[in-house]
Amino acid sequence: MPPYGVELGWARRWHRGRGVRKAIDAQMIEARMRDLAQNAIMQTISLFKGGTFALAAVLLLEIATQPDGRLLRLMLWAASFCMALTSYNAWLNASVLDFRESVGGVVLIVIQMMCELMLFVTLTPRFSDQAWRGWVLLYGIFLVVTASRMLFVRSNVNVPIDPGVKPMLDTVVEGHRQAAWRLLAASVLAFVFAVPILSLPKGSPLPLWLSIGFAPFAIFLSLWGLLSMHHQRLLMERMLEDALEQSA
Image (cartoon, rainbow, N blue to C red):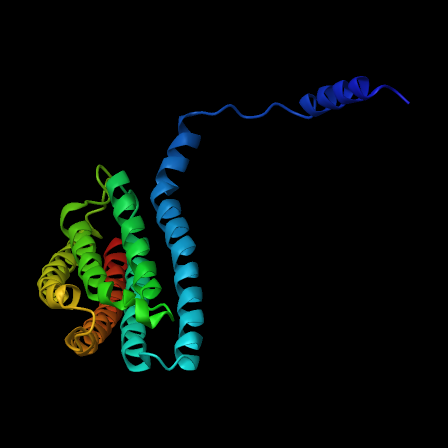
């Protein structure tokens, strides 16, 4: 039996002789760059959304078995879950049209996902710690980050766009701008509620009832967002069919 080094050297020579590998060229790098936006967004969302929904399931079981603050925690859990569903559907729609994403856009996505996780973390079963007081503030921060990305972060920069699909992209972008201003308005309301919730003493019952009262508004806003995502997807399908008919 030959020594290990001799055998390894023979294996390397045999592997090199199997064929000439294609050198890294501009086309290969361009293909990687073209798919970078999709890969970055989907990997980030898959990483955070999996943890978010798993944490939501665990917390729901804990809320069902722990009677302390059950009404408050259940209302805030429902608002957090509806928001996570809306955010997930929004990213599904965005993945169809985003072909180039900036570094700033990816950073804001990570911040959004972290806010979603922290919203569920505030609903810890240690109700006496009153971590839930930070829920409305985190919700407002999430809305500001989401609106900022819609307003200030441009996707598909320097990407050639066919004139047949440009109306669809412009319509989606305009819809994002309108939604962003609504989110900013909702964030102002959230910060107004957060001030007394965070500043009132621990023994005051008002923060609890303010948080319970804010939860239905957050649920309504998320359900409205889900409905908007559905209409946006139908609009995209219809405009895409028109573009295909014109190009045929």
